[in-house]
Image 1 (cartoon, rainbow, N blue to C red):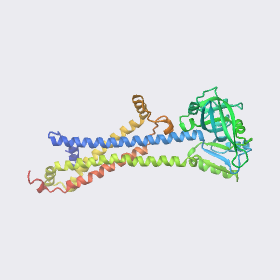
Image 2 (image 1 turned 30 degrees about the vertical axis):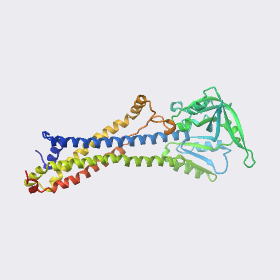
Image 3 (image 1 turned 180 degrees about the vertical axis):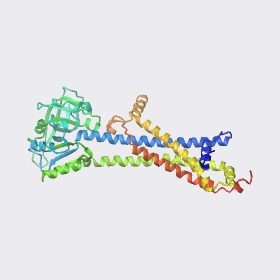
Image 4 (image 1 turned 135 degrees about the horizontal axis):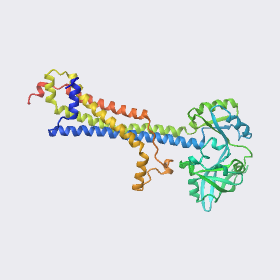
Length: 419
């Protein structure tokens, strides 16, 4: 035996001794069930949060890879002398790249197939400095094929919808105002498909078409003007403050749109969903905590005579409480540690598990046209794991208070009356 005595007795009750009696074996089984419930709850919570972190990271990476970090545009009209402005912006501190663009909506047609598309007119030489569309290693295409001779690059999903491949021709239909009230005339141009990109985000792969900047200017009849200049910074999280400083230095007539503003509702929704999932899945841990309460209440009822004898030998009520707090502490600690380890292991292998389930059942767990991504991402944050473990551990300790209080109120004379 070692001291302090409540710790020794609490460990012995948790271990269950030799469990020769049926009642002791049953209590040991209930304690093991409590540990398992706590571990399962923590495993689920760590996995869910890691997948949500992965979604946020992947979506941010995909969105920034296509839409760049910030956009500078004119307040009143398209930018005419964009070459000078582009060179000035590219030379600003912390700016890694600047590229002009034209953006407009059009209809893409091939044979009897029609699909809405967003057309980007880009400079093939400058575009790779601000987006991944020109990086084949990240699913982009070789943009050097976009010469001013009627070439076009399509998203892979868009090309599949139109049933076209490299070498085929598609027709873009762009609406053009006629100057009369309500008057719009279509502008039709045929282009040869020179390349395909597949960046892994269905929203872009299914609706984006790239033209040479000069071809886009002709199609949309904007002369030599551009819609704006897109910028890439060395740190996307600080791009808002830096682009605002740049716009202030440019003077009146310009404004900036940062990725944090353009997609603010989307990322707020992700954070809200993550918080709600944390609360909902925490309920599983709370249920496991109730199991600890039931385990300790049954243990107190079973050990009433033992408690009474210890009280007659001089054990104080505070020490009696300590016995059952230690027992709940051990259950919570073991369940928390096992759950954290299993959660990290499950989250780290979630992609392989998802592929196995898909190949076994034939069910697409992550349809690209619904969830934007084609694979289940994950990212384990130490802060999330610590928050989950701390929450579970505190709940397990709170669950010990009532049974321990009941044990401390045991009256020796009454408990031993019929022994």
